[in-house]
Image (cartoon, rainbow, N blue to C red):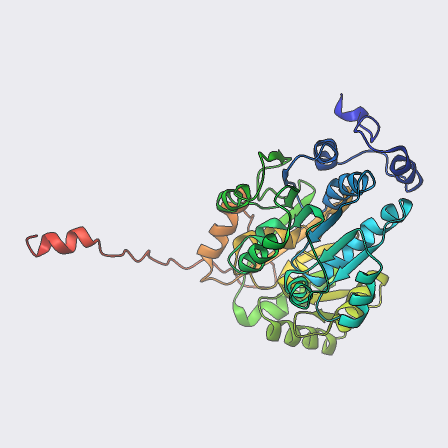
Length: 397
């Protein structure tokens, strides 16, 4: 089929779901939806790679709901953050209700009692973060032996060293005969190897190479001294008048910057793991409805915010993990809109920038601001480790 003529018809989607998509004015499937939905409906295992903001929730949600409607089993979706779990439920609940299916969200920061009550309603779809799901499993509030569809959203985070022990524990409760679907914007080769050990002949749906950023995002890099970051930030906030998402590396830095921006007269909120779930939701809702123009966040927001009109993403601090850069800037330029991403790097961060450029397979254009002196990356010689062979040779081995 010609790409320009693609629509949701012909993908094997049930008429009831097609009618819903038409009512919501979803006319053209995104590439990841076009490729993943038919395979998912057929029950195949999938590794899906596509840029952030390209509709991955429907890409796995439509097949899951349609398959659940045809059987008596359940579905499980595991996400790394509370915000992403809530966002997934928001995207799927109306389609699930078309078939009389209930959902339950199991995340930290919310009442265990209410979650237990939700589980007693026998939800067909469970959306959970790993830690809270294990809490319920330990308390025997939930069984997963009938969860025959598993989705790991942001699979690179789910299968890295931080979450992997929890995921392996969850897998022990799931039936071996199940459908497994993994989706993310970045899935390194080492993660693919781990994933395939838990999957059955998975189909790779790679819309763009892992780490590819959207073409509609303008990326820029400023080399700036650490003590001049806040001044440069102020200049940029005067230049760009729309909504701005700013990423900091630490929770303390996030709070400090949000406070500084408020003193400077900007409407700013903060979101990080030291804030309660209600505080995080209040900040996010305020950002969405215009109460706050600026949201300052740690990487907790890199994978859990779906606000379609974010004009600018600023990496005030570069991420510790270069692949997080892709997820961070994916918060702008969503749903086909144009976006802009600006990164601040100090003169001693050349290697960090190079690591990001290897992930995105491109160069970050360096921009200079007329009100600031030009800065350049410092030369940092590579420290070579002494070879054991040379050591032994020097002693006549």
